[in-house]
Image (cartoon, rainbow, N blue to C red; front, side, top):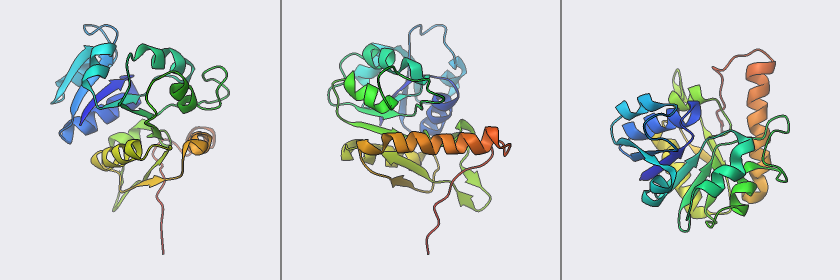
Length: 205
């Protein structure tokens, strides 16, 4: 796939590296291609920096991994997103998010042309995206959204990042549930003192 990464910090950087390793073409979508956070990602194969509009035009999939309060501004900066898939990794934490919206994905849908939006890669830490392996197990990923096209892309990319599976938790009405699940991980890791090296695995019998 051709993937534009908007937000080249911890989450965007971890996924850019994993997907580069899996053979995807990575466009780091930045305002200044000469000076940006995560410039070391250019050492990865199949990776180049482009301005945001050019990266979006070239991409099939757009990953948004910026701070949640900037969701509307970022969505508006993408240009024409018709026919594109957007993966939203952002979370509203402690009320800090796009004004007037209950989830970042709702803000993205309201400010872009595409209907193919999926929330994924938001329920665990960037360290688990860089390495989802725990002993003999691989962590699971989770996704939500109405678009089957977007969810199919997210599932493939989750597997390519090394997750064991990517479970579909429902449609757009589950965006908030996904963000609450993220806060559950944050609560355990940060507030309850378990640290970042924890993750979720769905067991069946």
